[in-house]
Length: 170
Ligand code: GTP
Image (cartoon, rainbow, N blue to C red; front, side, top):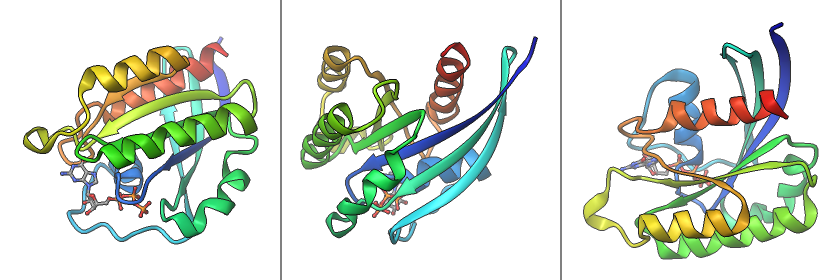
């Protein structure tokens, strides 16, 4: 039969990588060139209907600025899934993403399903992090990897569908 699942999802990653933009693309279908930096965290809900289940996402979009780092455990604690986001045009954001993965591996719920999103894939000419680099790191750490663009919507619905499918199987 069709399952009803309510799942807490958290987005983590360096400031400006596009966490809010990915969530807004998924929830509203829109993109803003001048998306304001998140203060603390923002909360969104979205329902996703799959063949196997209906998933109600409770989404915590955390603030990437370093001064908010200490708040993060409140948002990833009890989360069923996490998306760690970096910006393919910033090696620094990729380094930061790996730190988030390590923190989640140490501190989060061991059943947490983790995704790695290399966002801003539309900015190919400014790319600093190779697709293979992201893919390799994800493979080594058991993460699902996608390159996304909140701007063009590339792989954004796919990301949330993959999360939903994994949650339906869990
Ligand atoms: P914090 O709230 O500071 O942690 O940032 P964030 O990770 O939520 O990033 P946000 O969504 O605010 O996006 C930062 C900037 O990048 C905004 O100006 C967005 O318009 C832009 N941006 C986000 N996603 C993309 C994308 O896929 N492609 C391009 N070209 N720009 C993007």
